[in-house]
Image (cartoon, rainbow, N blue to C red; front, side, top):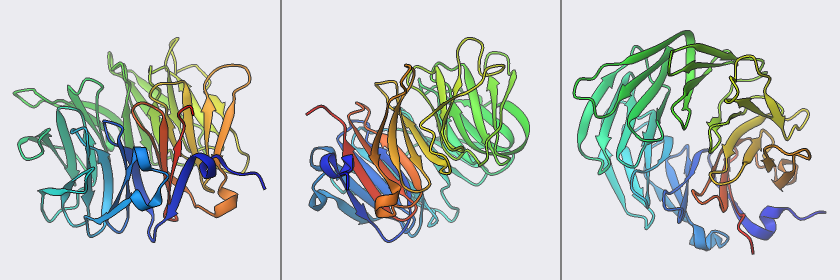
Length: 345
């Protein structure tokens, strides 16, 4: 049987509950994964293939979200216990918020963090304790994102999305309306567009310059994972049996057909993550397969990291690269966490 790349250049471990998220620290020195039972798993980049170096901490009574922190060496988690917790790479933890309402979503920039509880989105300074503003929305917030400069924060919710200026003295919302249930959000790295995923297996977008509507449809499943590539030329999405790329150049995406990478007939992509340094997309599939696909070029090279058929890993729920792009982490619905070193040896 052919050896998988993860066996030669990585490691994996199975936990007892689903993995709800994976992420790298801003300094790229530590990976983190969060389980639905409220555990956070810390994995040092320089020892990631040594399972004995992985640290498991119980930080919540039921975790809901995981994010990179504003700080270079820490992570933020929110949970059903109403807590917002900062966990440092060395295992120290700090409770930043305690309350009765669930912490549903988290997003950060280098200068601010934001989290939602129901309809409210709270913005804090990077140190985590100082509340700068609380922003109310028409319905429960389902996704949060900062723009690339950290000057604006956007939230998805029922019937559209809302955009706010983080440092505005008077909080005035810029609404983007479209009927229906919006379940996730992404913003173009150049600030050109805002995109939400819909309950109805579609994407909806707005040009930020003039609020022109853009609809991207044709998915057989909900798009639960999407992200812009490093230069903003493409929006990579899950929800089909291939990684679907919508062009955000040459007048696209309206009037332009999407490109597809790494089609596996009968298997659906459940998670995507663009490499921050190269024109490569990581894709995770419902059977646990994880691969890298090159954007552009005639041969569309694909590098499988692991096959879902070999170890019954379960549906991939999240993928993240280090900021330097040289290593990757993934998590699955069956509790598998895997890491692979992609740097040249």
